[in-house]
Length: 302
Image (cartoon, rainbow, N blue to C red; front, side):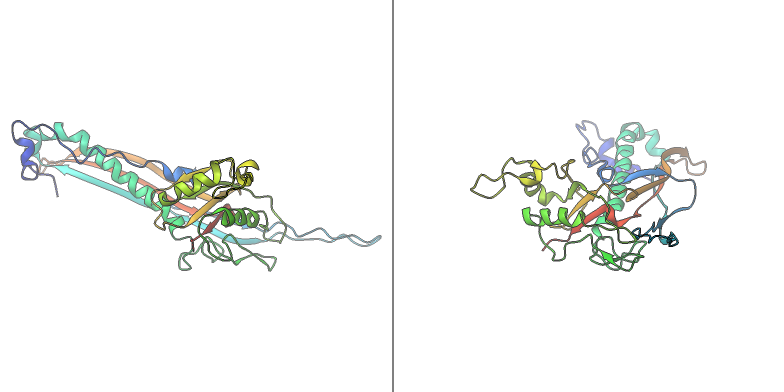
């Protein structure tokens, strides 16, 4: 439905002082704090988790060496989605100079809509992190207490007992991250890099990560999290997280959060011969997902 003069009657009136409603700032690029971007040239991308080898055994004198095999564990699939939005202005509105007045504002509003969708799509990976109906390559939700491995054991990237963000839960999360194992049960040297939180937890996060001394105590103990260099990238606020007490720690595990860009955002404008309307479109194609769940540790809150 094109934007017509009847929808913009005030814009035609003399003495108009200001137009408003399209000039809001936006939270931009927050998904960049979570996801690593890679390009894609196909309809979908797949990444296969390999198991590696188990612990090397002792070889007895004169005995044959033990052979091990590497196997495929699971496959993470990224299916790209096309995101697009457009608006049109009637030929009459263009004639009455409405397009020249409003084009910049409406193209900015279009960019904000495209950006908002991308932020929501990225945040949905974390918003569904504890949802057993939203599974990833290993058949489990992103944050779980029982991620299966080929070696027969499990590893967990969620607190055993759900807890709100505080000193105890954050320290326990870092301890649990240090206990991550690979697909064959070997310990992996993974560390937490940054805390990802909704706006409601920003004050708690500041006290936990930035103060010299322990928060909420009258003694003179140091803040161990800060003093030991834990979470070297501090914390980031994601305004698109829907659970006000859930928190996440992004680790330095490779091949974790990924954003595949199939087609970057492009804009185009054209006139329609039959109606004379001017049409403006924005379009991009991408996907968000996770390959290795060891890239994150989380708690849904108490």
